[in-house]
Amino acid sequence: MAKLPERFAAIEAKWGAWIIENEPARAQARLKKPKEELVEFYDDVRPRVEECLKYIGQFPIENLPADVKNLWWLVSSYVGVAVALEVYGSVQAIPGSYLLGDSRFIKTHNALDLLQ
Image (tube, rainbow, N blue to C red):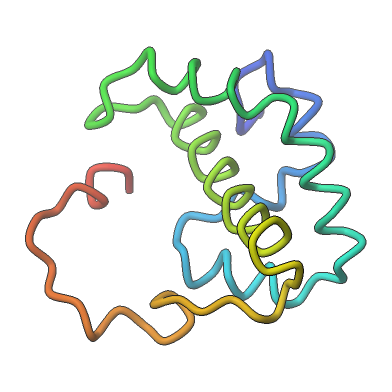
């Protein structure tokens, strides 16, 4: 059974492993991959990110179908890789709360819970 909407089957076939539901797990996946693989992921997905976001935007965030939610998680993985490559030029040197844990932050609402 497809994890992503049909129109994104090519992305899923090659990059389905990047459908990762939470930021700490996405960060760990990114840190474990060689830079060459991350560059390939970035280069393959980047041309379709806008299309992905427009597709996701057709649905209410509080009621995303499972395949659209998976697309959201894949795009979220792409964003982490994009920041690593574009801003820091490295997959290792990313400052951020997701590497430290989020215990320093006070949760004020449950918006992210809607996506799980």
